[in-house]
Amino acid sequence: MRFVHLILPALLALTTSCATPQQPSGKPASNPSGNRPTANGSEADTLSDIVQLTHGFDRAGEAYFSPDMKWIVFEAVPKGQQHYQMYLVQLTYTGDRITGAQEPIRISPEPSRNTCGFFSPDGKALIFASTAGKEDPAEPSEGYQRNGRNYRWAFPHGMEIFRSDDWREKAEAAKPGSAIDLATHPITNNDVYDAEGAFSPDGKWIVFCSLRTTDGDVYVMHPDGSHAVQMTNNPGYDGGPFFAPEGTRLVYRSDRNHNDLLQIFVGDLSFDAAGEITGIAKEHQLTNDQNVNWGPWFHPDNHHIIFSTSRHGHTNYELYVMRDDGTHDIRITYTDGADILPVFSNDGKYLMWTSKRAPDGTTQIFLARFTPPKGW
Image 1 (cartoon, rainbow, N blue to C red):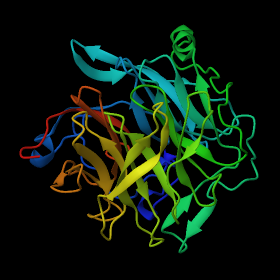
Image 2: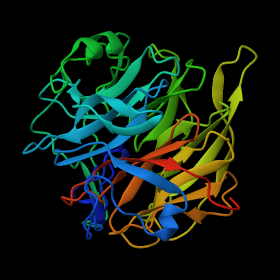
Image 3: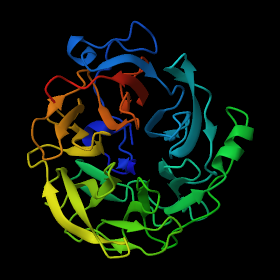
Image 4: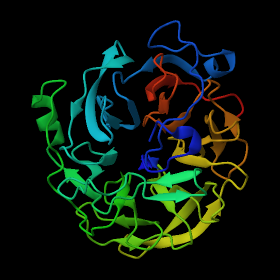
């Protein structure tokens, strides 16, 4: 997963950005207000009205908004189970403020492993990756391990990308807490890991990661799975890609240096005369340090990128925002434990992320109103 397949030493209970890391150890922050963790003064400068959206899972994470801000799609491990399932849930509002979520609806069949949901910009289609129909229970959950403990990626050979064009009709007809199967229309069929998918802002492309090349590269394809174009071709695992809001750039993270670290890159896209994406014209490395930097996501202003970093230790991943040239990064979260996989709402008013700040010490999905930090 962008979130589900990268498993860091401190994320041994979470999920990757679409590789889901397992969640980090580390003491959870005090939460005297129940499902609204108390932020310290620094965090409160940018995050307000913090709400815990998921409850009752062994771990949950990597959530994305529907365009109308009524639904989110996410992955979670049900109590007592091992693998991630995909879920949809309706958000609840009090006036114009998001105050929680209804009971989730499971949308993946069992047995299967699932990750990386995403909505099309018109809200009509939903994609996610699943081993539905190809699940091999004998395949290890952690298929790659480096240096004994630092990184573990799960790359199931049966992981394909599915698209559902009737997700809303089925979800609205389903009872909260029930299950439906939306993994019925695969748009990849390579018997290798295809996942980490996200739509372009105009809905004409899906960017994703695939192991159809040896060690994982970024690709784009049309929403029906046709016209796949390889974007990166470097040693190491390039993944977790997203389009910038203006649609002419990609942001992603890479382990291409094989040094147990992740760095963030932006690629300027090249197009032919017909408007088809042909590759990356120029790549820009935004981070180059001794940290794990991952889960990058553009702010709607096109000029800022939020990401998670290990610069405060592998038991305390924190969110930072930086300019799109890699300069002027500012810390956003200040709570013990992992804060990872951030996404902004399309209007920039909300930040949603995965955090180990839940009162029960599990990793769950949180949401807050976002105020840009001074001087960013």
